[in-house]
Amino acid sequence: MRSSATEIVLTAVLLTCCWSCPALAFDETLLLRGHIYTADNANPWAEAVLVHGTRIKAVGSTRELLKQRKTHTKIIDLRGRTVIPGIIDAHMHLLFGSMEIHGFTLSTPEQSITPDSPEALVAAIRAYAAAHGNDKLLIGRGDFSSAPPAAPTAALLDQAVSDRPLIVHNSTEHSLWVNSKALELAGITDDPVADPEEERNIIRNASGQPTGVLLEAAQELIERAVMRTLTLEEKLALIKDGAHYLNQFGITSIVNATGDLQEIELYGALRDRGELTVRTKTAFGAVAVPHKLTPRFLADLDAARTRFHDEWVSANIVKFFADGSTGLAPPIVYRAKEYKALVQELDRRGYQIMTHAQRGDSVHMILDAYAAAIKENGPRDRRLRIEHDFVVTDEDAAKYTALSVVAGVQPAFCCSELGTNYDPKDPTPSDRWRTLLSGGVVLAFSTDWPCMWPPDPFLNMQQAVTRQIWRSKDTASIETAPFDGAHQAGAIWTGNTYVPTERISIREAVDAYTRDAAFSEFAEKTTGSIEIGKYADLAVLSQDIFSAPPTDIANTHVELTMVGGKVVYQR
Image (cartoon, rainbow, N blue to C red):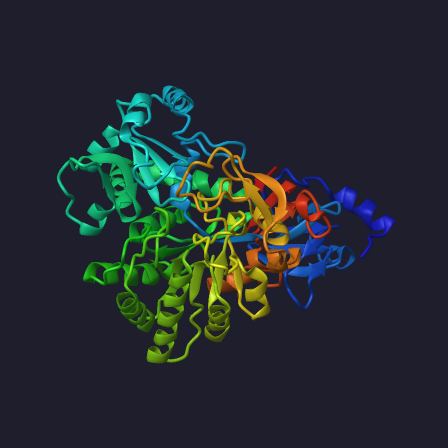
């Protein structure tokens, strides 16, 4: 669809505000002369979009929509730029990520400073601490082994900071490395803690003293202490900034893959202030903590879905961890019988279920439990989810299809020479995106931020299309790292690819981040595509990802992000 010379001149006359005016000053905004992918199968491409208030009023050609403009309609001339629906990150951890962008990171795309370089690590943390002398506690992220005797100790962190709590999140978010002050803050001493699951995951030396590394469920001891230390306003400021950070990647909606009622209330408070810039749906669950259906837990679940079910803040998901992500192989969290009973009961109560699985046998256990819940509780639209989906056999892939299970995947985690399979003796290829798609399975893409750093959807898309193999010399000695991840922790492309037959197309990758991600959270009627009546959530891109060389997709930047008709980010 080409604009005539007359239309272009008319458009230029109308561009009195273009990119710089605040969207709230206008009742309507017209984006025209663009290359717009709508993700609507009936009409996948358009040239212009008319936004009225928070929603899309019309989609079509520049000529058609110029006829509908009003006197005070704001005009944005896209000048041929590509537009896609707002990115829906279907699995991330906004609170953790918000804390870590305000802290330090030892693991960036360019390099990873690990305990193998103790002097450089101490120097980096000392420099950060000196520049943040008023912070009550210091939080960062990095790569380190989570298996003794290779795991680091508090002594090294004490050299960096000894006067304040210092907490380093593992890039997997399944272990923490802390200094002595942080152990003191959390009340972790030589005596066992009250919760057996938490105690089991505290690494102690032969004398019973905590070494400074906490695995899986034991992380909750530190997380509770951190949340007690931060004030309400500090928490809200962190999350507000975290949401704005996501906007620069075109992210307009997220599914929080961990959380509780208290965290959801923080999002509600920001919504009430008009300061929330991403739509949130939060799952109940904590990393590798087994659920117990106590009266308090069930009451909080019910309160969350009763109080929070609008376009900005919603709940009604329960997140399970079938396994973890520490040690030489992911540790099992549930016995099959226990997990099946919990799933059946929560499914009976009408909650959507999502379950983390990194092992192939975990995937099999989850599918069996999901099948049992469907049989026991009867048919309904459940959209049961499995997260990560690293190792899926042919038999289990067929079960995904039969049970209509949604696969929540993060392509940038792939690929090393073994993909993301922990077992070198297992011939099953990992990350089988084409196999699942060909079976009619819905893929919902995400970054799992802050596990992926930064939360770049275009790197994910590139990896889905190319399946490049990456390797990092910085993390090569970390025994418990199952994969390097694409452009993570100093990893570079080896020049090879992993099982290229499992690649998908760029359009399929965009769909997995928009339309299908919306479906995964029951939001497809209001978000996920650029269609009349849906919320005006969209992203304007620096290049046409649909025609760019596959290995160049990750070089895409977002020029503008709109959420509900409001420009929330502008490059």
